[in-house]
Image (cartoon, rainbow, N blue to C red; front, side):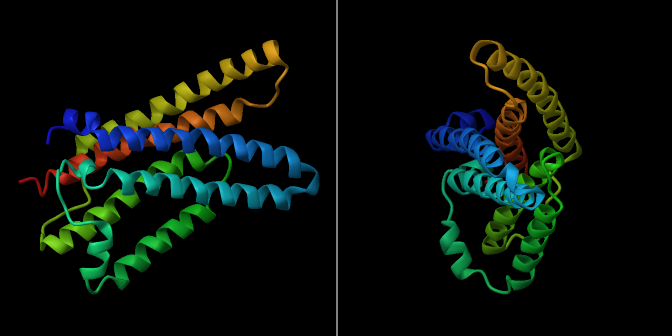
Length: 214
């Protein structure tokens, strides 16, 4: 399956829509909670940051789940539930991935999340990929997608950050002048920053999937 076919696949389109709803809804809800509990002190804000970080991981992981196996360029593959039930000796890798997720979430903050989220996206994709390759008996599979893909992902992340910053500033100015809404620039930036993870996931996953393409 070509990368264009992956992008235009019905399953991917539906996943994009669901991912978009989550990417838009979470920052708005987070903004509401920040406004409501701001008077409670910094401890409440810290817990809101942690909860939002975890929710973003769930949104990213859900996108990977719904896009499987199409995101690897595959039309057919065993379900993830089947893979988990039939792969053995997975405790070590499961623990390693969970530990990395936990550490990255704890290290997350309102300012660093946009740099950590691409790591979450690639980590979730790699985990699913290795579940599949272990079931298939592919021992030469690697999490390295190639230098060109890594550089492209870095470029996407950087451009997305710049675009999000520009749109958030312009959008916040528009909301202030036309509707009197204030402090939405962070929320707007979070929306576009989260949406940018979708192409990163698909590009990274498709590059990994070329190792097992038939």
